[in-house]
Image (tube, rainbow, N blue to C red; front, top):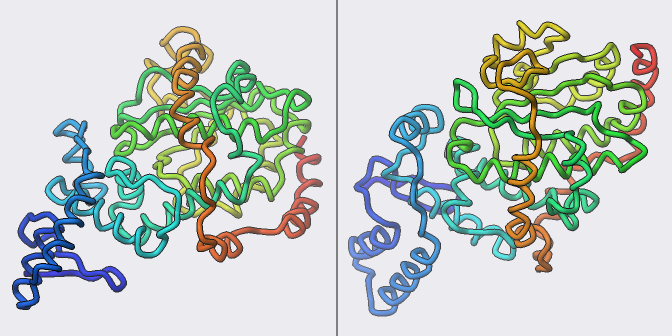
Length: 366
């Protein structure tokens, strides 16, 4: 039997026979002549614990199963083995982390990191760490709490997916009235939108595309978005949330966007930065990335008028699920996240220094 090692943990490789982890442990113990009554009882208990989490049923089509195998290194015959391996790592390294451990949830993180256990674990820890480090965004996070943002049409999801099967998240910063509510409310609405989308296994495999329409954005909007906010927001999207952002299409960007992007770019990984496409007012350029037949009329499409009602209702109807996820009192853990958060955070003083360096550019561009 061939095994591989993750840290101090040993798991059979994907080339071994397809067996559940409990059976593998029994066989390994038998091979070593070390299986006694106590060990058998312990193994049975482990199997019962494993069975408690493994209620997952795959909803992917054969085509998406093949795509996940090719792009994400996901093998259906090892899917539950992989989620069990990640579960074991969590329980060993972060035993007090208040997280879900069911297969469906853990697969989000494995797919987002192409089934690299260590990277998936880091992503999961970051996912929970964000909640501790940014209470303004994550406290009382539920759709009804951001209804003014939803009603403004700041963020919505187009009804149809593109030719790559990606959902299109439409963001319109110009719809935000800064005097009405703080910018963090917009971030909360985006996070809830992504949280709902990632429930779908189709989205986990295909990823999403973002369409940002900067019509109406001016200095009153841009002045609220400094390096500190950019760092934390991008940190969540790149390293703290299990979603694959495949493209960011920017249209109708004003001159001031050069200043906004100057704030963003230092925090973007090269892979993500290369997925930004600035189309200006050239909608034909946009249609080269997103087909016209799924775009609303205001973006030069043929899919009728943009209707935000359906997506708002989808989010609001999920209120109970988000309350269970974000609004329940629970343990803060054993402090094992403290070092990670301290290492990843950038102080407001440092970011304000950076902000002073780009403010002049913002005003110049405007």
